Image (tube, rainbow, N blue to C red; front, side, top):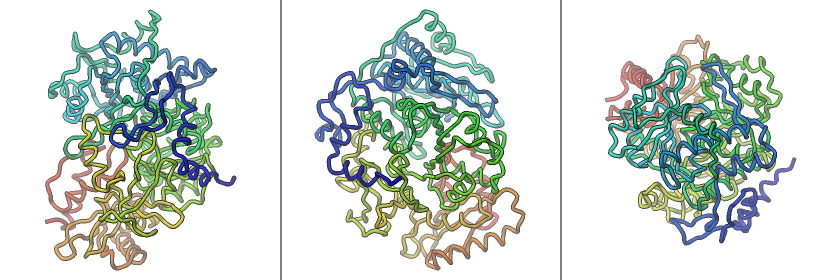
Length: 635
């Protein structure tokens, strides 16, 4: 199939308003928009002003009315409890209507905020859709987030109500959520009026009389009463949700997502970018606490009439490196979207891919990777073992959908290893130097997006327009600053090399840690790696590498470290001044799989550092510190 990408992208560029007006036909509007785009509204303009709509209606009601009532909408698969649950579109709608009634009975109405503090269970999806049905603004906080972090979000969003679960499940432990929630509310200046608590059988909790409501009991009452709650019409430009960025430093940023533009972009992306047809099973192995969970576990698949998988487990250890293949086989998944970190973990535990052959993967046709830089070796490993296209793509919490992709639905373009593809319609990507001038193709610089941003991108930050301008728009007037550094090649492919914070300055040479990591990952014994810049009195900064070895590697680590150093010097050159690699058991990561390079750098430089709120296992930082000290690194 010859790719239609270049024609479609040119169509968008020639007439953006006609392009998005056509895409908007796939959404059911209660009242039509006055115009496609109003350049004078909001901070940089707004999409589909004047229209009214409802995201829950488009995700559920219209499918039930149009013949999908008996199609499975959500599959819950818990690798930790060994349980599976399926809900059809009709059943999911009944659950959402009943919870909407509970929320409405407790004072939640259009424009109110609701914080959702849930693990990966179906009720998390139900909660998001119930808020959308009422026109309430949900703010999902990753289940098990520390009390102080949750309190910060409660104070900023000022929710009328919180929906929570009694606990979350990790491979070897139960995490009690209710004490964290109670502590967060005690720490907050703002006090939510009620908490609706879903009691999980693994650990029930005490409810506070007058404030707390038992989720299951209250929903059952509304179902029995047959309460009907119609979808509340909201403006296309009204917020659907606020999602806080990690908040590892200072006040977290509340990314706002509108209703209309968000639906148009996500619905368009499912078929054209991801190549998924209505009725198929799509699995994003993320968490509802992250933007990938919002966009591609909940909203995009349901808007498109697909079946979505809600997975509770890990890529390895629940119980082994074959878990993902088991889920794909059990549920007939056609496409998986996960973080490169997950695949590096699978590859590290099962380097030969022996588990893959144990499962029927005949339905599986595409693997999508995003969230962290996908090194070429991991992509090649997955391609060779799975025999299907492996698509790296790049986007941000702020955009809500891919900025660059290799658009399967429009026809695959040639793969360039190390590149997450070409710009999607809506995105005019430029690479600028520090003075704001465009650099020639192949030159490293600041990756920016020409304004206006397309439908679905953040219109602002929650109650912080000045901060929005300062964070994203002021550095390069007329452009949105992604804070990523990268290269555009002569064919228009983007290579995202690092966050701009991760470009290190070695004796006046600006070097990308991402390029060095690519070389480290190419060593056959290396499962995962990270490179940071540490202070150097002579050169300003010098690179320091960390490697995690594949399971079963019994070679001398000193020899492997020397080989890795030689590789970097051969492929990047002596200019990299790359001399030191440390072998560690595991890398410190956030729960979404991002490597905490900035924290590692602070530890190595013996600077003051704060425990990142999003860290998966704090103990790993002690392990890093011990290895650094044993090698005499740091002041």
